Length: 342
Image 1 (cartoon, helix red, strand yellow):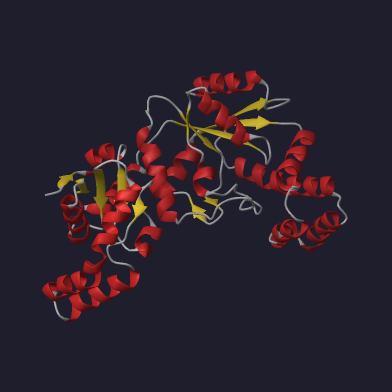
Image 2 (cartoon, one colour):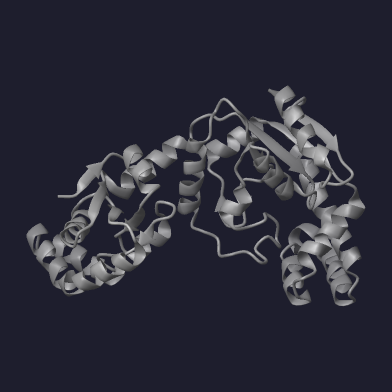
């Protein structure tokens, strides 16, 4: 028999093992335990067939139909898991910790694996994740206008041992109309929340957690309302970098992409820029006047940023003016300001 563990014990066990998600590929795509590998016991179409059989005939017929559909694939599952794992310890889950995970557990156990099944399945993990994201955290927000180097500063803070959650990295998007350029496809909103919940849970609430100043959406991803509310109430350290350096950073980051891609992004701002400004910005792109284009984009995003910050409570914003983010003292200054803010 497989061993069944409650969620937190399962998560500890899973750190040192391969985790198999045996739900259908559609369920997996919607959201899964971070790091889990999808090995569907029933694929999308097979799951529909079994579900229809259950509704029309009953549970016993559905079980038989399930074995008819997957029985011939048992040896394939065993061979695949043998390739995936050099260890004999495997963790498995399905939607509710029922038929699918226990069937896979039974099969793998017969072939020599030590199998642990998640009690309550993915449903239990998902409910836990949503509750975790409601828990208060000691948050500090790192702010600054577009291309101030906030992502690099977050990395430096993490290297110093600070607790950092990079929301843009989790969302595979840099937050602007150009934010998808050079990024992998964004995860589902559900999976973003799952990954965020594990980081939210892992950090010690006695120390601050650094987050970048964001709107409530990062590309197609919506930050959970509970987390966003904490972010808006938290103290903010606003980094100021000279405009010339910010323009250079825009060019270093985005001039590597084609004029066509940059034009697409610029056109998406038409409603906010206005047709005249958008047309001028596109003309700069086509004339290879990239600095003028970058300056126009920064003017637009700076106005939006200042408007957003104006909604924060008085006294919650501290400013740190710097000449260059590579200055080794910048991170130390940020840590000092964060400690004072608390």
